[in-house]
Amino acid sequence: MPQKKVSLACEVCGSRNYTTNVKKDHTKRLEIKKYCKNCNTSTIHEETF
Image (cartoon, rainbow, N blue to C red):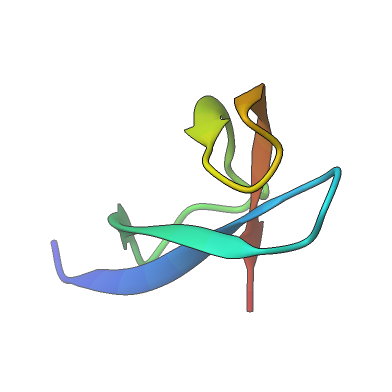
């Protein structure tokens, strides 16, 4: 199954800190709790297009 690269943005400050690979046939937006260096805490990071 082919994959595509997406970036993850912090919901609090909006900075794009991470990139990850996802399958092309996924339907929901990816949400992961990650550490944000700008907020200095762990926050929800959401897939951006």
